[in-house]
Image 1 (cartoon, rainbow, N blue to C red):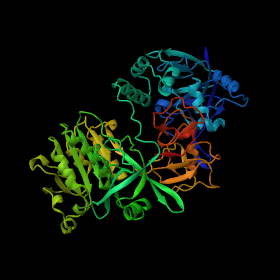
Image 2: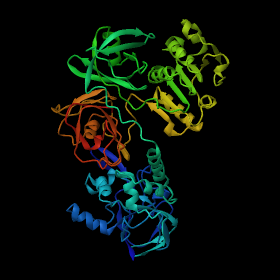
Image 3: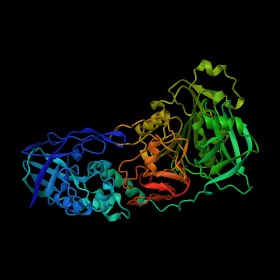
Image 4: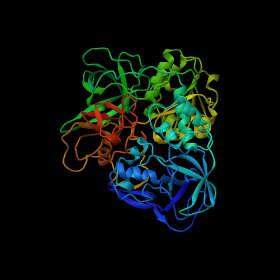
Length: 602
């Protein structure tokens, strides 16, 4: 019979780690006597990061003494004591490959249900001073598992463990863990997992997404980039769209045809600076995907070094270097309705999508919703209007955020004169006049819902972060699935650093401290920083952190893929082989180093 050997508890505390502070409850220690187990916790216990740990579905973590014996041998350590794997219950028996999701157990005066395997997390590596631990737990099929409290009650070391019910589906903890984290998911096991009611909602959602991907017909093979590294492109003309926006038309400097871009993709330009590392900036292609020239349209920012250079130094006949068109923010080849939302210069990628729809005379229902300050700063108004006129089921809505009296004082070119205007927060049918509906004010949540975008539509959003966040929320309230809402962000992504409460000397991205590295060049495109690799860093992730680049990670060992980043140019090698390789053209910075000059979309 299985037995409870130790009850381990610990309250969250701040732990110094790699120059930062992590708030964590991973430090658990055995306690004597009875302990009351409640719905969310054992008395005296807590979790530091409630996004990944704790809660009703993860109230108690279980680990086995047999796994302790295993790791003592594998890690060649004799200092592993109960609670050191962060578990609340150390047990004799209940192996991960025997316990099933949905099994129920009586321990002392409480009853529990198995809900999910342990979440892969770097903090177990912190606790054990073994950074590889999150990956090892999965690779060796010894993750441990969580319990939900069915009946509250007291437990103590020495209590026997009795199974009171067998889980539906007969999928073990090890089976479920491998299904999510290891390659080659078995479709039959995946379908069985979706029928296990006891499985925690988070894992159910992950498996639903996996199932949708498996059920989709195989798409075309990934298209290789049009060229490797950077290519010289010649400026054929410069067109001033507004006082602050200019378009640069680019063709190959060697007169070879340019590869066709996908609607929504971008170019990464390498911009020279005398006596300093080159800048790298990414700009969406605003031209038709099948155009013979690429067009990027750039807003001059007041303190933007790259945009200022392009506006003041780049003229017809000049040459600039660019990486091939890339990006996952592309118009899907679907037959569902499509909604294109943009604000300011965010119009560029969705304009390319509009070009594609117009070229096909697409029968899809299309919503074109653009926000500008005023007609004088509304780039591509006439171009968009011509394209929309070629779509039989298109609706156009233009929002001007300047006050009415400010707008009326502008000199408005003929092609931007609105067909009709309406008060704020009202959205009439633009089909009544055949032209765009022009609204003075900002896009509100209510206005988005009143647009009537169907729940099966795919929406594409580009603009300031606040704008995209507001529109995303409004579309979700209107019934659109989050998987059908696509956004493009060119600045640094919001960091995901679970548990980190003090990020260290966070600030603007900068060169790493200490002597300049002598290895390959590493360029972080979103952050606009180039530096050289130094062996003082173990991974590209650590180098990014040394430069205060916003990063995203969880396991730091190649398991969870939270850090997945597009690799725009160059090659890497893995210091720890990921349990599953990323998609072609992507890299896991948490466990890789550069072998050539690299350009990361980070």
